[in-house]
Length: 405
Image (cartoon, rainbow, N blue to C red; front, side, top):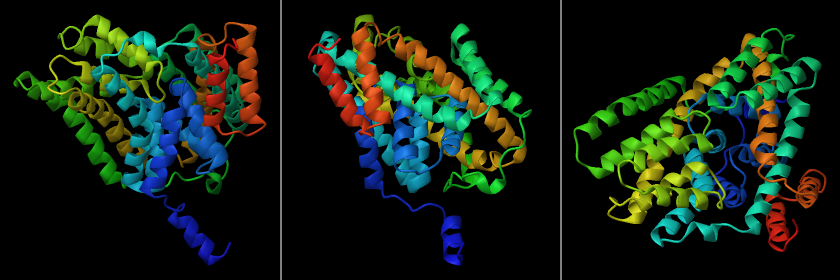
């Protein structure tokens, strides 16, 4: 390797502009249907297989960290990817692009007082079917890379069985911890040079400060809200706590949100269910339901204002946690003992993906032979014909809308 090449390697990968990252994630935000597990499949296809920003092992390490953290795991993975290629502006661009399409659609839904039934239709079922193909492709690729031997394949299958029998966020965390402990028994990992760095452009000191800020806000906001009549402060406190305390993301956040907005009278039970129905019809993270609830709140002086405040509040913990943890994680993951543990953790993550592939991805989409044929065709187009995911999403939605299945 030449001196110039060594210097370029030490400096990390080429920086990507704010606008480039925004456009990449905006396209994902407009086409990534199917929930958080499907989102991880879309991200892997875009950034590991297509753009080669990182390899499967580094991607799995990032996913593993975000599975440990409370909050929306897929959004945190996106924020981490943006941070590694564009710094803090890149992290913001990734979040904006992936989140705003669904958030703006749900705020508009609340403001226009549309009914949830309009968000249902055959095309929505087609989007669920294509999610089967996306997750299957991610499972296939990550399985070959991260479970190449009997030991790690066994960890993956055992993890899938465990969380299938005992579903829930805590079961997922337990599986990851157990996978790491079993990984310590595996053979020594690859040499240090083979561990692809994550290139986090933040120091450990900055990471610790961000984690401290996360904890301070979690403790101070409830106290400030308790002594204040400000609706905005109560709104920020409620949605910040919901984003900070939920493990498992996605549907796990629903009871926390319901407890914040329905008993207080901000949103009626029927309005809450209507928003949940609408959230199923839009791409991107389910956490954007917060934007609908803030906009629909009876206390909000303006629907758009309330929606944006709630959206920022529920995602702020995700930002602070992933930006704070990544600088510390990059150092830990490079130690030989940690690499052995991470080999087991990554196998367990494949197991979680396998369990999620069955429930809820497969069980919510495949009901008839026609559904299976559509999913198999989508998998063929993605895995063998290498069509872009957004095009396969559009084709499957069109096929379902025209009555195939």
